[in-house]
Amino acid sequence: MPTDTSEKGLETILVNYLRDKQGYIQSASENYNVDYALICSQVESFLVQTQPQKVAESLAFASDYNRRNFFERLKNEITSRGVIDVIRKGYRFNTTLFDMYCPIPSELNDTAKETYKKNIFCVVRQLHYSKDKPLDSIDVAIFLNGMPVITFELKNLITGQSVANAIAQYGKDRDPRDLLFMPKRCAVHFAVDDDQVMMCTMLKGKDSWFLPFNKGVDGGAGNPVNPNGLKTAYLWEEILSKESLSDIFENYAQVVKIKDKKTGRV
Image 1 (tube, rainbow, N blue to C red):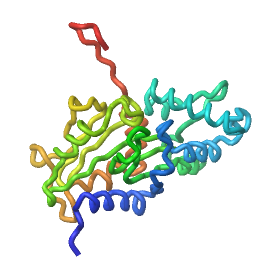
Image 2: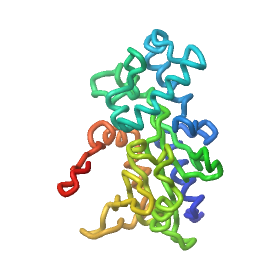
Image 3: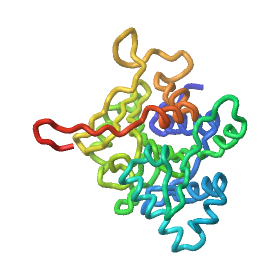
Image 4: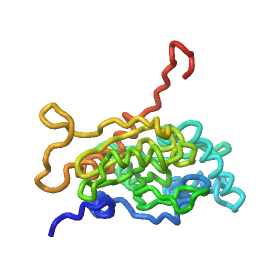
């Protein structure tokens, strides 16, 4: 049976592979809280499973008021510091410092291996992200312990749309003032078709700058032919594995501030 590479087909391929092969859980858009840009139930579940004493002592979820306060502050911390910094350094609620992620364990540390497994890698398709435009949705989003880290717009060549259309959609339809798309709230935004992958780390409407995230072919652009499937399958088969993403978040992803020599602006 031929591979379905329509937009929905590509979406299904990516989501099913992450769920069935990479061990992600699949959640639904209705579990996403547009006020905080978080899957709050997953944040709470992760903390209760990994740091029950801190949860109890901080009273973080002891009442609806405390819970709202906890998530409002977390939203503001991610907006200010960026999701990568929160993942790496944690989040302080009152006097309690919560670890928001369990790092890759060493081969010899069996306890850390079990703790790492408690990280919640989650994929959501057709995420309705906007409070003002509730019908708008992004094709796919990835969350780590309830915090969004990656979004995707998916297109395909068979129906006459390509990665260029996905880039245009980010530029035209995805307002960078929306909480999900604000700077640093996600690590990266991917535009994908069956041949190419492009990435952007900071959306700026029509000024969004997308860079190739391809393997290259004989020293040139693009991706090599994949005898086992789509040219872009390496994205979900390799890059989006839990271990690969963890390595990127722990060691490579970063916010770089550059000062313009002429204007002095950062």
